[in-house]
Length: 109
Image 1 (cartoon, rainbow, N blue to C red):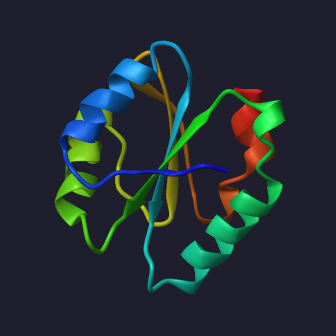
Image 2: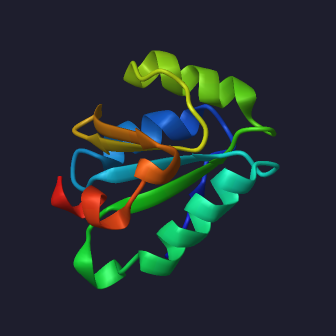
C-alpha cells in the first residue's frame, strides 16, 4: 500500500482530478487515537494492490485540521475520525468511519 500524504490544500484539487480516472481513498487518521490506529493497521493488512485500482491518500488530522475542514466543505461529508471517503469523478460516493472501514467494502463500490 503506497499512501500519498495530504499536507496542503491543493492536494484536494489533485484528488478530484485523479478520481476522474481512478477511485481515490482519503483516510482521515488521528495519530493519538487507538481506534484510528487499529483501523489503519487492519486496512493496511488487508489491502491488496492487485485487487483494486483505488489510490490511497492519508491525512494526519492533528497536523492538518484545516485540510480536514476543507474536505468537509469540498466533498459534503460530515467529519468523523477515523474516516474513509471514496472519491470518484470528483465526488464522494462512499464514506465510513471507525470499524465500518473495510477494504472488502471499498472494492465493492
